[in-house]
Length: 452
Image (cartoon, rainbow, N blue to C red; front, top):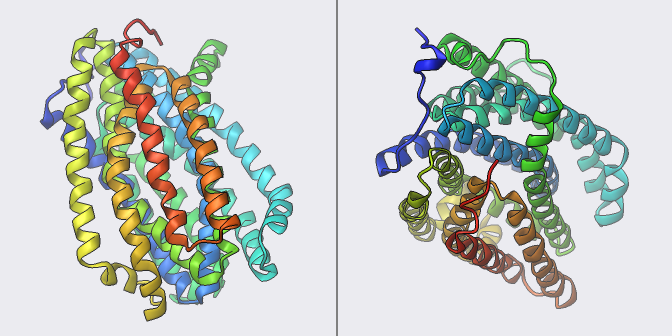
């Protein structure tokens, strides 16, 4: 039975038990889509090295739009967490539905850009004509999943922001099962489904996103969260809420978009080095995404807990809270570092690309495993800034970082034509520069009087 708004308390404490109660379900929810993505690549790798490499290009392209939604999600999450900390429960559902409206508009823009602009851009930037045709055909289908993905992300903001992250796994588990089954069926023509090859992964992913979305909203309604937050009552459009969400989110949207555009640029430069190097880099992104789930879960936890604690008026507890989260984040990253470096052949062998591929990939994996530790520190401080409400600070930090990042990868990969191991060293540069201004801002105490 659901409780009334007046008795519902969504304020958090700052102990390790609370941190793990929020972070572990988030990590489980994040890891499931990564399993989907890796499964896609394993199945596509069975079609050939070209397909595995192009999956990297299309994956980063779709990730560009996914992180735009994630920027909106992070901004909305900070607002919902702040209202939860202030115990202003009635505003949470209103914020959620205004976030959904904004997300659907952005999704429509993403679909139109992909259909009418992306073919020209990919044709101009990639060297392999067959790869361009394959990527364009895939993306014109895959992009149709964007509205469902965005609403799914708004659900993340709602559940994490209201300290109910344990329900995240239900939708993502549904999505994972559907995606794996349909990947196998559509790519290879199994289970009575048509054989669609490379494009089969696109259809499987869209259907899986729809299934996950239906599942999670069914759970939200069934367990009473929707009634507690008056989630499904009619919410009239109010310009002030749209402005509030956009003011909080647009710097984060731009920050994430700039970051992934630079990563797409990185992959375009890698493509110039050949199919094998592109395939190796795609597997690195898989590993980065899968094992980085714990890090990103602690980042999301930092965002929501910092905002919630500030909403309670307990600003003096913010910095100790950040250091407490940081210990858990770095601890998990160190475990990942050890696992990857002890058994690199095991993780690389699952892609079925042969000994030459594994030998080329192991040095890159060493670089990536160190970058994961650096990321585990930086993202906590960056998301602490998000939690304070100063999302513009994140944008300025990202913009400055990307200048150095792009210069580095262009010189190393394009001008000097060095091995891709040097190219992946850009991750060390990226996370080092991201950390410095975020760390300084939190310790400057300039955020203490900021209202959102």
